[in-house]
Length: 466
Image (tube, rainbow, N blue to C red; front, side, top):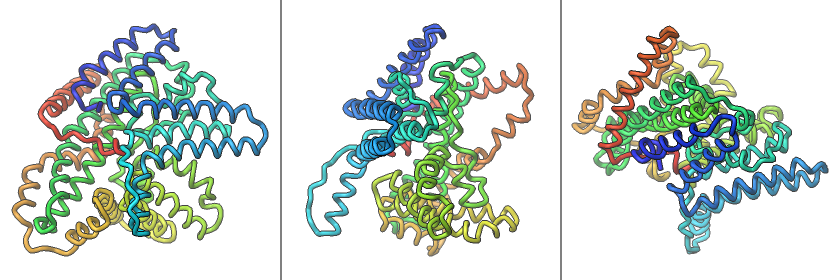
């Protein structure tokens, strides 16, 4: 089940809200129980045979955190930490990387080990990292262990962020699990945020995604240089509005139920450097790798050579987290190289040049990165980049067609990848008229989005596969 479906919008969500808010606030445990049951059903609809994997992950992490909290001797705590890492990363390796590993063994050694054909459970990377972060925080003493397994289960399985993030830390919702205060203001803000995310997804991401899909899937002989750049731009907008739209929907729904999830995007395409871009894009994943891998490896505390090695390790694994394919590893190492160059000398130069040049620099390398990310293979990366940088004759009728046919979507994509909505909202006074305007605007976006849901069959969520 996806947020941008009629079954979610007009059956699941209304029924969930009706049951949840029919339970009195003072019966917090019952409200949490209802939310947990709906969340489990939400996942069951999408992955019925793999529900047991998520439930098992919750149970194992709950028990390991409890054991760690009760163990005082360091050797036993370290043993439990190793078990925690093994259990969580083992599940990821089995379901996400087994065939990738076997395929590479076959290629390297010339053998023919049959592939397993294991289908990866939706959202496994997200709920695994979320459960793992809870146990690690208990181990490091950042949070108190939660003795009520239903609270841990609600935290991990909460349907707004279950299958595509953002990765919510337990410390963010620790108090809200037992004492949150749902109110009409938060519900209104949350629903508007959800609708804005839905509009991003349906009106921009899906439309431009069709453009990107068509151009990337063309026979290279049919793809001109201009067309290759249009495809790269379309995909850059698609992945931003797809994932930031999902994050908006998750944050908005969380707000409806009284949870304050942290922001996951902060207008990344206004960045003046790659360093700044990764502080603004998928913030929850970046902070996860920083806190649980980069800093434990030594971060920038062990000299320049060790810092460079740490950056390479973190970004290779960040790429691999996104998918079991070498283009994702290349994508991670590509950004690692840019970040290292900026740390060594380039960032100081970028801070001195006029902002227009640093913006162009950042966007240029970001777009190239998305081409690597979206290509099906390393050969595909090479072919597509060659077409982008070795001009072909003419711009081609098809390139003109795409620009003209989707000019409105491209224009709105540019406008709303900037802090336009934030600026407009800040200029509006906090009064009844402003609330009315916001509600009317949200209602209009909802109508347009629902019409798009009804009329399109192209409705992927890019990050579901991660």
